[in-house]
Length: 408
Image (cartoon, rainbow, N blue to C red; front, side, top):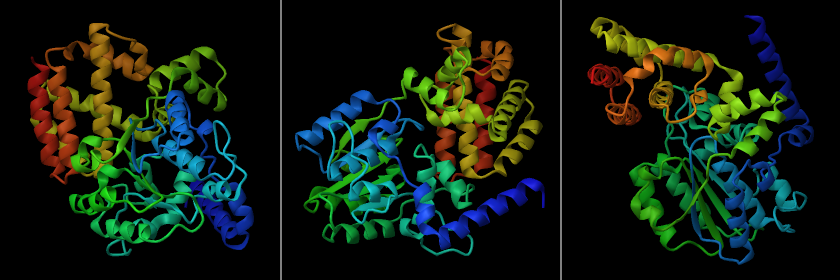
């Protein structure tokens, strides 16, 4: 066992000992500062939510939607906490009352949490959110800008795709049929609501039409286009914008980066996403790998080298679906960055140095004549993979289409 693995094992063991034998000490450090002031940016949206609360016009069903890393889940939790706070202030929850203390641990009896799950090896046959609720709380307490890929990694099934099943919707109906324990509102937060299968979505329609008194639905989604229109029509949509530049620079300062030039560059590159900022700061192996695979893919398509493309699809096809989707997201970002560089329509600092150096030569092949179709094809490939299409075939088809488009 290498030194890093030994250290990780020791730290995990220490954490578990503290958690099991000294729960009060453990809980002291695992609390969720999910307050409005700790959700970066979104000043206008926070003001709107506070006004809704003060006027007692809270809709019974809401959707918080926006790009990854913009704080949608944090906003939903902060609003739920504010509504049930026993002594709310003018612009935030008190953070001291009994309700706030329970929300800080995500353990309030009237806060119900639903999220995508996946079957673990030797795990429960038909899991629901309650099966993994402890792990999910830990994940959110560590980072409320959590992505689905990060959550699947936390479960140890990053090669699987999370889902919200019909059994989950039955659990939701059961929980919401009970009376509130102590709070003004019983809150059901459904994270990544677009992961509900059609049967689960259909089950929720009835309760959305006739919700029990004092019940609030708060859905969090990145792609509302994949939620049933009949559900959307029964909800009020709140769009969570990208984090503004000033708020992003403050976050960068909290990371210990005091160089104004570096902070400004990171703020541009992160494009309003805290998750993207984390990636830039960590410069993880996954990001480097995705970039190198994108460069290789485009070179093979440009030649075109079909034998090389077959080898490339075998390598990428051996990776899990979530990692394949992550690669395609990186590819879309790089295509956009190369177009901007080519037509000089924006700030080329949106590409990191390594990517910019390569894009200087490649960008001339990404232009207004082919970029829309390229974007569509990469997006469709991601969707087909998510819908369990045979990934090697999907990626090979994408390569053939890319080879043709690069010559236009």
